[in-house]
Length: 316
Image (cartoon, rainbow, N blue to C red; front, side):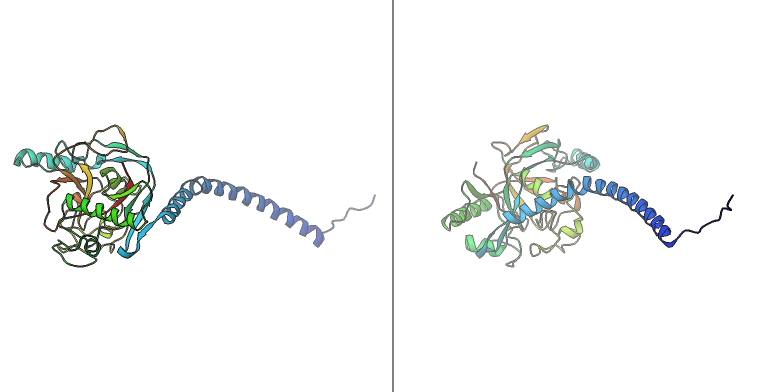
């Protein structure tokens, strides 16, 4: 019987074994990679591309009035919760107690016209909104002279009433229609309160659309004056100064929220005050919230306090 001898593996057989090992590891890595890509695809493939598509739509549909240097951001239809989230209850209770003790009403807190009940709003029509508040230079170009207390071409126009703001929008509509730059069925106007808050939030649900100090000129950092528009960080949809600088008139009459669900709300048919939003240079943080609302007489010219931004909306 022949004696068995051990034959060491040749270099070819060792290479084949190494190749098989590499293939096993590559298959394992491929499986892990597919799992990772699947999870990433679920998140990024659904969420981030949707955000990118929305940003691309805004960029593609952006409008500018060249001679006024007035930029407008396209806002897609959508749904959101309008009003104060639950974490603001303590703030509201403070104002309610103060109101009972002092008998002083504070619009926006502790009144029947406050920023509650939270209301689900559906906006079915796209619209455009000014990237910044209307500046003094833009106001002068349309209206002839500036009523503002703080003077500067790039500062927001202020000390304007609701009636003044609507007169500007009317003249702007006539001007742009004559120039052939107005989409059919659209006109310049003030945003509805729902449009304003929807655009201010830009998909957020908290008190502010981001870091307040980075986004707003308000009591903590303004030095008591207004500042050139667009110098603070914009929100996620590219809108600047939605918090602070000057209050902004909205189209609606000031009244209580309806609660439940509403579609394309325009506010009550009548009233005594018009809505203004966003807080201003002298507002504390609680007043500069996305949900905070105030009301003033349509003819009120609040000294250095209130301005506006234009909306381009479908004619109702």
